[in-house]
Length: 114
Length: 114
Image (cartoon, each protein chain N blue to C red):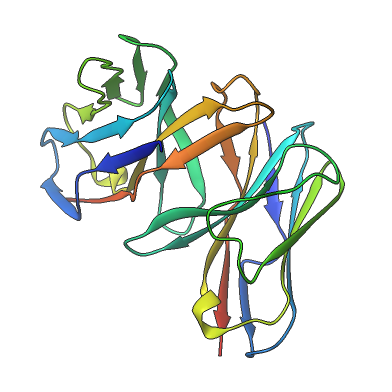
């Protein structure tokens, strides 16, 4: 079945460091790929998405490119801030007969220290 | 903006009690979901609904039931709460229906069963 794998956390970085969070997936079809972020005490919210191969999603300085050949959707940011401290979830969505099936990775906790 | 409201942010219940978690959305989304979130396990799908009075089991439905009498409201029911149901519960709605839509989450309900 479909699945999403993320790098294990927690990840701790200094402010202005470069961030990469790896995400790979297995899917039988052609899913859409997402990164969601959960700030402390809040629900998840969409960070960025890509709906087809080679698409690049971007938002708030974060980027991820849909790589079909390596089945990956790695999240990157060139210079992290303390306010980026959160849990990041990679997810895929694929249309079934009558509903969308969404599968999440386990999440990666990021702490950014001043 | 879509707003997803969960009725209680924090609940404390005793083993064997019946627990209702309510979720209301203010947009016209057909799809609604209940997840539980546990450290190290990410988000696990309990139940979802893609139309009024329709419900489908997710990955971990045991010990739970749901009700969707109106489009905007999706309730999660714990018929007889147990300590292993202590968790964060997240409600979400889905825009789209083509496999490309994003999930919108409520802020979560943290349930403690004593």
